[in-house]
Image 1 (cartoon, rainbow, N blue to C red):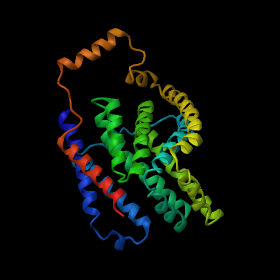
Image 2 (image 1 turned 90 degrees about the horizontal axis):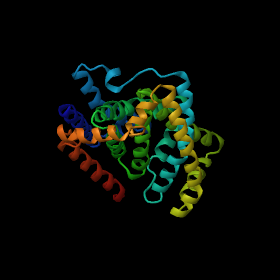
Image 3 (image 1 turned 120 degrees about the horizontal axis):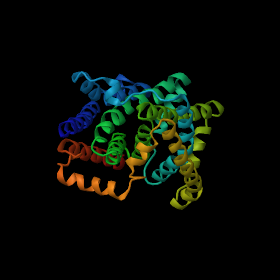
Image 4 (image 1 turned 135 degrees about the vertical axis):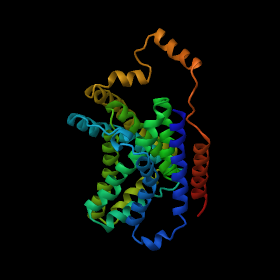
Length: 317
């Protein structure tokens, strides 16, 4: 187990180093269009993980936990995404009070300069496959063997850090936890891929509609969010819907797990429904068995590098 964790953590460090080396390449000259830069960054992100799977002759489906889910579950996932969106929106709005939104302009450039289908493929489909395969497929599915809850938090942390800026880190961390949760509810990474696609696809669709309706509509909409320049105003406008949406999301989440026959597994993951004797046995078991550490030196180095780079991106003009 420890050797697999060590290899997984090495993949993260290698991904950071490859991304750092790629940043010194003349990307702007090679890809004057921002769409090319996004595609290049996604390939760089996925390359170390792909090499890891190919070199070890590992089955992609088994490695990333790709399984079929019920068609009805897809409908529930759409509803779950709608319910949880106010919470993610509030987190994003709060983060924008303290740091600059560095992604909207890039997405706007892609959407306004290309067709809707191309924008959806680039912004929604490719990230939902590449990023989920790496962060929930390789990282989370390895970490969860030690502890599902700790694995969720750690894989979400790495997912947030790899976005490279504090604004994206905040909601990417939350998204990472939610995506891992839906994997546990369905036993398939297909669930998190669908959610990831829906979230990115919705943003792309809204931007496309705003750009078609009025050239200034997009900037006005963004300005309305940025003008909420106090924490109090953001909380007053966002918290009620975030709370209501989250309550409904919990209900829908349990319906998803029940629909896939995973409700008992989800409850067990959080210690729900266990009697005192079972909890006592689980607490005593680790004392006689060696603990597997999730944090190793390569992972610590990668996290420190990502954190330093993220801070530098915020303080440098």
